Length: 85
Length: 234
Image 1 (cartoon, each protein chain N blue to C red):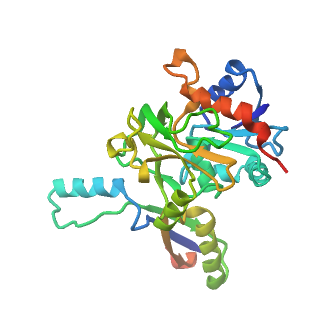
Image 2 (image 1 turned 180 degrees about the horizontal axis):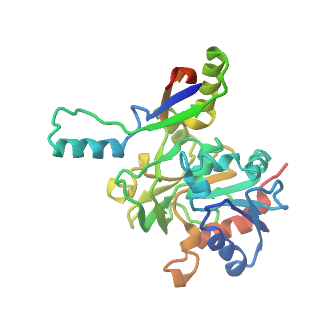
Image 3 (image 1 turned 30 degrees about the vertical axis):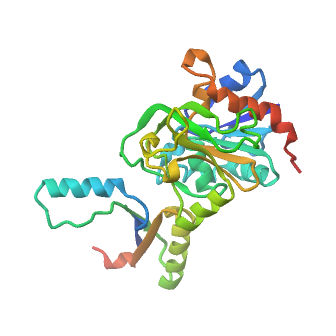
């Protein structure tokens, strides 16, 4: 099983990287861009098992290490590996 | 007085801190390796600057799992003096020993420059040698030193007087132009509620000898050396 974890800065946290990327996109002519937030993508491979249990464990991983709750939010998707080609 | 300086893989200010402790002040010094599981009878533990474990994932995120950190946490719980400088501050926040977090500088630049710090607490073992509202000249060197805490936490630490140092101008005015990294409320250093765990981004160990351009940092080391005995370690 694979957990695809996305970690993003909380809305209240200033994100200078996002602001800079937004300015860069604007300079390239993508004037429709109204906001950019830069976060992290983390892939975690797990032993196959129940999805319910995996969800609980990955949530714990996010809380304990993958995200810092003071400054970051997280969400993730789970995918069974045998579905992948 | 015995100081312990923690060394993680990637720490870079350990020898600077150690130099001030034993060569400048003549106090007992031991280096504590990140895999050590006892503190060797230290009266004060310093977590120095650098990039512990490469600052992988987030600054300080991996360092907090080092075997030595469990002992540092227990030591802090007993009232022992713990002093995190730069990366050490980031580690203490990640470990939950101090409130808040340090994020990317607002400028996105690594800032290596002199700053002025307004001392807001002089009743602490770390600052007892400072005068009321002293302004200390201390250098910074970091890319992720912008202090952040959610509004409720920020208001709580302000009410409880947990802000020890604030970036200010040479006259002690806390103004936006003196803020090198975008820290909320110009915060440069905070203490825990008990008063025994201090975290600060600026580097006092780099301004403790006249040859280095300033000696204000020595006030903090002297404070610890001469006041640690007043701290009750139960």
